[in-house]
Image (cartoon, rainbow, N blue to C red; front, top):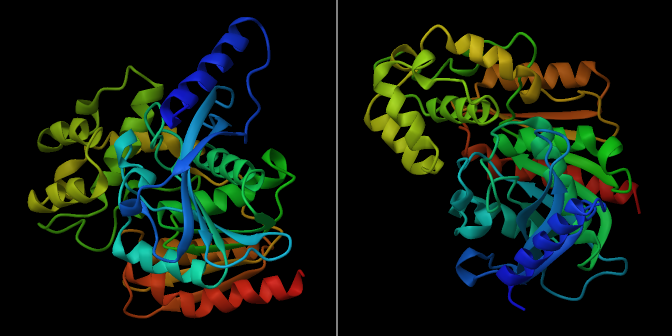
Length: 376
């Protein structure tokens, strides 16, 4: 049975069971695995797989679904007890199914980063998130939606690959948001997982008082040039509109941006950002005043469920970050520390959003190995 037919059969059986009043398949169960195409793989992996697994929608808290991701195993024999695991939660790539990382070659930056962890003896589990590579629209920055899908990818992988239940959740940008959210939900949603560290770079921080200017400040957002953060606003609106069908894009965006929101449904982040920059779209010429009201309705779903994590958290901040304003990341680090989370904060002068990822390895690798040494 091939990958597609196996997934369809499993989903059909699950739906039939539900229709007959039976419980659907539990979350965190592998439905299918298949070799990942070489073009989508990593040089330091001995084997690599596309996986499909059961999950529960964190958006509505109840809908059973299937999500996708990838698993990469290091070269050489697995250690006794299995490979320790780096769970890679990726940055913003879009909200359409075809944007999923497992369906595309990874960027050179991400290849360098993930190959480093593989070469150091960590398996990599790389979830796509709900709606990427799977059915439905991806709800961008929905903290519970990201977290549940990520945690279920780990549970499914631990049961089917030679992996140790020694887990580090590692993310950048939206992935840092997903990583911290997953660490916050782990004890309540997936208590059998042993997450012993979280590593973050370029972390978004949304709280009850977050304003449009907090997100879309700095960089080029108040000039006559384009702002690379504008696609985030499109994705936030699309997520809101997927839940509330009565929302009208023309109530929140200026005329020149209205058509772009529709474009964002299918356009992945790189071409969408290029379009925004070419057309010099920024906060000044994109938003109507009502956009703050829309953002206010979404804040609860974008916020972390807790800032208190019971394991060490690494926070890397690029001091030239425009995509996630540096000041936002610094507030996040301060508040996480104040909440009682054991935190290691590292700032990188001259580094932008993307550059911080690999530069931070000089500090995050020792951070991870120190935790492993303390938890034999």
